[in-house]
Structure formats: C-alpha cells, structure tokens
Image (cartoon, rainbow, N blue to C red):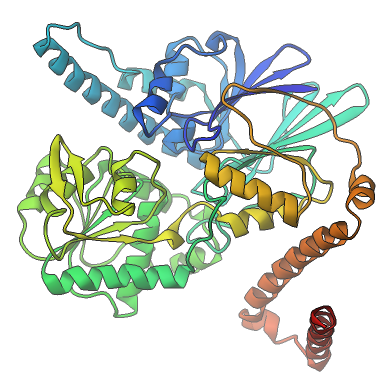
Length: 538
C-alpha cells in the first residue's frame, strides 16, 4: 500500500510535487518544482510545506526544468537532508538552472524591497539564495538510467527515458506488502516521438497506477516539418523587413532544438544571411552540457556528431554572455535572430527585447513552447493588442508566430499512444495540465482505451493498492466496446513496428538482406487491412 499526496501540478501545469508514504512510515518526494504563472499560483511557493522537510528520506527528480526542480533549494534550506536521486545529465543541468533560479529570486526580492522601502514597509527575503542552491549539490546522487535501486527492503525505483529533455525520466516504483507487489509510475514530462536530439520515450507495458502528464491533453501539435517551415517563414518575413526575429525559448532543450534546426537550414542553404544571437547565459551553459552528453542523443544527432558536425553551431552564431552585449543588441540596426529566455516572456533578457521591438512593424515574435495562463507569452498567443512589459504598456505591432510542433511535450495523440501500450489496465491519474486539457484527455482515454481515469485535486491524498486483473471485467461490462479498445491498442503496436521498420530500411546494411518473401509478407498484410476496412465500412 502506498499513500500519494498531490502537492503540485494538479489542474495546473507547474509546481510538480508528490509526497509518498510507505507502510514502513518512510516518506519520499517525486519532484519539488516551482509554481509559475498567475500570482495566485505563484504564492504557493511561499506556503508552509505540508510535511517536515527533515523527515523526507529521498527525492526522486524526473528532470531539471524549474517547474519540477525549482523549490529544491527551499527544501534544503528548510531542513531536507536526504538523497536526491536523478540521472547524470539532470544533475549537471540542475547545477546551472537552480543557481540561475536563485539569482532571479534574489533580484526579485531586491526589486520588491526597494519598492516597499519607498512605501515605508519592511524589506522582503528571497525564496532562496544562490548559497541555498549550492547546498543542493551536496545531496544529489546521480544514478544510471534503467538501473534498479532499492530505497528500502520493500520499495524499489528505476528511472526510464522520458524523451522530454536531456536526462528526463519516467519514475517506476515497486512496493511489496507480504506477497502482493504493486507498481506505480510517474511519467514526469513525456516527449514526442521523433523529437530532435533526445531518444523517444521508453514504452512501458505494465503498472497498477499511472500518474501521467496532460499539458497538451486537449490538442495535437502541427507536424514537425510544417513547424520548421513556419519558423523559416518568420525569419524571412523579418529579414525582408530589416527587423529582428525574437524567439523566447527555455534554456534547456528548446534553445538547443532551435539551434539544431537553424544549423540544418544553413547546411541546406535555406537560411538567409542573418546573424544569430544566443542571448542567455543559462542557455549558453546548457548548450555546453548538451555537447558533453552525446550518449543521450538520438540516432540522427549521433550521426551528425560522427560526421564531425556540431549540431548546435552555425557560422553566424554569437553567444552574448554579458549584460552589456545583450543591451547592445537593442541598439543594433538591421535584421537578426535573437534567442533569449525565459520561454514564457515573464522574466529574463527577452522582456527587454520585447520592450524594444514588439511595437515595430516587421518584427517577428516566434512562440515555440507552452505558455501558462497569465503569462506575457500567453497574452501574445491569444492576440493581445497591448501587453505590459517592464511596467510599460507596449503596443503589439510585431507579427506573432505560434509554432506548436516544436513542443517537448507529447500532444494528445502522443499521450494516448504511450498510455495505450499498457496491457493490464492501470488506473490513470492525470496531472501536470490545466483543467481543460486534463478533462479532454480523460474523456479520450475512457472512450478510446477503456482505462479508469481520475484527475486529482491540489493536496488530495490517494491510497494506492494493487489492482486486480481487470481485462475480463472490462469485457463483461463493455462488450463490443472492449474489442474497440483492444483493436486500438493493437494498432498502436503495429504503428510502432512500422516506425521501426522504416528506420531499418534506411540502413543499407540491414536493407540488403530483404528479399521477395519479405515484400510478399507486407503486401499480404496490406491486403488484409484493406479487406478489414472495406468490410467494416460496408
């Protein structure tokens, strides 16, 4: 038996945090992320913990994004002394990301204190400091992916590839009570199949309980190829107008993907003669960590490296590390591509570039990631004519391009595919999504796959027990509908095999062994499917 209390990322996208209590009395956390977005949500960062940080035995960290890791310094500051288990790339990324987050906390506290001083009020302290962030590193214990780790005699954990960002993981947990074993999975953030740089999410077949993200549970992304073309259109639009292309991008994964694509455009001769500036000290450091971890690349990225190509470089790329270099970009005349954080346009250098360029006809703002409700990025996506930037109301005359195909999150179709691989009907808990997205995904799971679904409330506690075999129960209750669910799952399996076959056919060494019998098998299978579709349509 396992008690799970949902302390974050419930009916909202940020603040991922789950408290686990075992029968032995030990306590564990999955993630400890920062709440981001509207002030009502962000105020949760300052609330008292719903547990004693000193009583937590270990923290299982799915990945380095701040909405999953950003409150760890506060956790350590308030008494946590357990182990933080995560993958090696996540450990490396956390060092730079948590220090950057701490710097932002200090700057915001300083700004707020100056404002309060003018009002005759007492100063405020930051949520945590850079010193607090440094202390986190003492407790991080990197682990190998796919390795079984014993947390206690009746509790084991394993980290699987989530395909979201470098080092991102799905957490598998096994608990044992006498002779009964139970498996619980936390998906973390799941990536898309065929996403750039990182490998596809690991497919898991069995679980009793499944906590899965639902960020894009209510929609599907545009195709990746279409999204690349839209990015090129945005670049050409501003290049012709002699204005800047602003790309608000998260420092980890999205920035590296944009650099990868721009490099691809350059090698194809499609990128105009335009300078590119990576204007984010954090993203510059993260890019170097990416370069140092090619073992985590997918097949295509490793192939580039084997040919001596740096996937994150191109001739006109400049890294602007200093504040002065960043300020100089706004005085610079002529077209340029500027990639800067943060990705939701709520802080960082991007807000200064928005202030100087949003009002300029011919400028492009390219939105390439999820924008939480209430953020400046979300307002731009929703078509706002004016937005407040650094205290000023700025007219939006720039052209806003919203490109969903670059998302590091699986869309509804991708989530259904991943969930559909489970063969023993786990109970599904939808987290890490706004209410609308979670509700839409829940309806799709129930109707297409036939799994039981629950959307937890904030601070809701769930008592998890081993699930009984349910396939026969579903068959009796749903009759023909169960065949639809089984057929859907089989289609997913077929799609996976087709995808694998397409990749293998492109390998000359593998393809040279194909013969007429193999072609006959495929043609026979194709004809069977045609017959099946024809019979059902009739």
